[in-house]
Amino acid sequence: MKTLFFVLCLFLSVEGALSQETGKLYTTFSDLLNETSSSTLNVIKEKRNKNQLFMSGGGDFKIYNGDKELDKEIKKKTFAIEIDDTLYINCIGLKFKKRPIGAWFAPGLICKGKVYFTAIPTGSNAAMAFGVVGAAVQSANAASSRVFYEVDDSEKKLKLDRVDSKKMEELLQRYPELLERYQKEAFKEHIEIVGKYLQAIKQQE
Image (tube, rainbow, N blue to C red; front, side, top):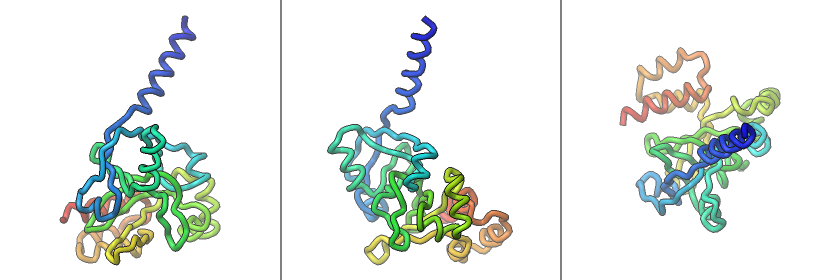
């Protein structure tokens, strides 16, 4: 009886963890900025584990519907998905310096006409982001090694750039008080710090 109860509890916990949510799909960068959703689907948002992130990098979440055709649309034809006012950017197809970012969906935000998201660099991207030694450390501790990327479509072609301290200071040039505070931060490129200042810029809009 106890075994049956345990199995039932386990089933219910898994079922709850993978419950469907309503997602707004955006096909392109411009659709997202214009808030023009291509469709609304029931989707499942599943947190990826450390091994999955280590193997293929990319975003923290696997988002899918369960229907083969709809999953193909989500995976190959969707730029971003909005679930409960939280934005997730599709890493598949995105490249930084001609190298793929990785797989699945990463948390993101819109700020000053550009899109920012956090993902885990992998392979050559990790080496560029952290250096050769840093990349080895990053690979061993992938879950804490996310970086922010900026997506720009001003030239009608998606261009990615990493938001390092230099980039962040450029973004803060118009906000002297924020820039001064940022320059005093000890861990300028940590995603929590970068995210905090991107949100602060966004609030100035």
